[in-house]
Image (cartoon, rainbow, N blue to C red):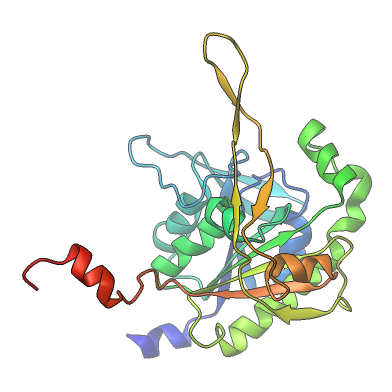
Length: 274
């Protein structure tokens, strides 16, 4: 079976969590299509902060649109849905690589990494046994505020050329040599104004937390999303957030090995008759 797969024409599945109208989508498809065949399956609308949620009780509708010469499949579901359906249901062969992004905003640090729909789509690819990588671009404060306020970055078309080119180069490396040794997937965070010349470094996920993500909007108890900000757990000069602060592209190999080796004191606390 492995021999048959290796002889198939390689192609890249692109998805995101910002939806089909993301201004990063077409520049990314344009770059990756110069590398190999590309097929895009994306949410019909924005699905940020949805992590790896998978639709279970609601049937999903698939649409098809043409944007700047690219055929794009849209799904009335979440980013992980797009990855799974793109891998298993829409096409005759499995992709060689899943590229999720380019996310509008950073996904550096543990809190964002675990919450991100962009990263969640890559996790789904990993669980489907396809090498996967998530790409995110940190915006300047005024650009991100404009995006959240009116969902319009048309005045900043220059934002995407450099990040899309960097994504292509990293994707080419993944196609040629695979993921870094021991990695389950890759998360890449790029600083504002990223170009091909921006320094790149391998990093680790900074340990971050956050406080309230909701605010009471009515006395009766209605709550709306209002993010209070990240809380770094410790100063970490070698993590992905520190790399962004230095103006570097943070390339973070992520390994899903979630258990810890119990110490003897904890064995005495919890185990019985083992």
